[in-house]
Image (cartoon, rainbow, N blue to C red):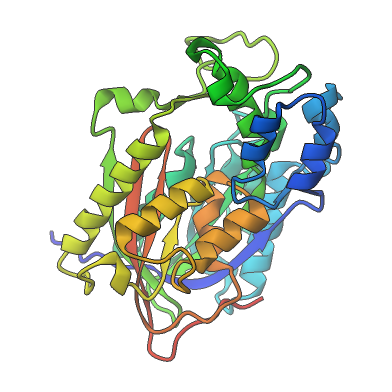
Length: 379
């Protein structure tokens, strides 16, 4: 039996953000006396000006050891995004045959995010399939698109609801002491700077999208993937405790980050883009020809390096959504690339590239074909 793959069409999309938002200047003010001048300068130059948190007291939690006060649970954030998405499309909710819950920071380990969403959304068909795509980090959107392609090929009359939700700010290590820049520390103490970076770079968000076999929105796919080209790349960034190997956690979970993340991330993005360009369905000879280039917002340093690699000026309109999402929302892991699709700009007709890469270590690149006449996301 031959299965004809279907590139999903975007039928609807909506983002939901926690009400609590904190500027980088606010966090730096709260961190006075806790950060060296060199570290504060670095944290202020990540390309992030604002971030949202499900915590209503994030600066106090970060620097004063306050008990976290949750303004909205992450599953409720996902539910709000899903309902806004479904309200913005004429597709009947009964058409949903598969619900994907995508998160690397779910509210709890069991039940999963997607099962908790079913519990809070009685309107979802009880017979719809559900699948968790968890702990895929920043490359999660590529996994979700690939899963939707396979499902729709077998069930073309159905739709797929994908809910991305991340809440990493409650997991940020507290910073009660004095912290220094990487270059001010001996190698064995670099985790001190990693902890501070975590508190300033990552943020919370939810995005929901509805995908179908037919529709007037952009089409996604096929997807090119690259995972752990070198075995040691799996150790570039880890959350080593909280699993069955280290079931007892003293305080918040740890988060490690290798200094090789930037060069290896550039390698993964470059090589996976080459694979995507070589696909027979891709009409692009180079990334610079893409009508839109949406690249995961790891940090402004990584974005600048990839723009240079791809022959695109950092200020070019094709890549501006990548910088804008980083600036306004921070690094929201699996939500970052979906957030770029909610950017209220008109996408011209043509073929774009979406690049999602991150820890584990993996990268997924896929095309986005915008129909004649262009496309603008509905508010």
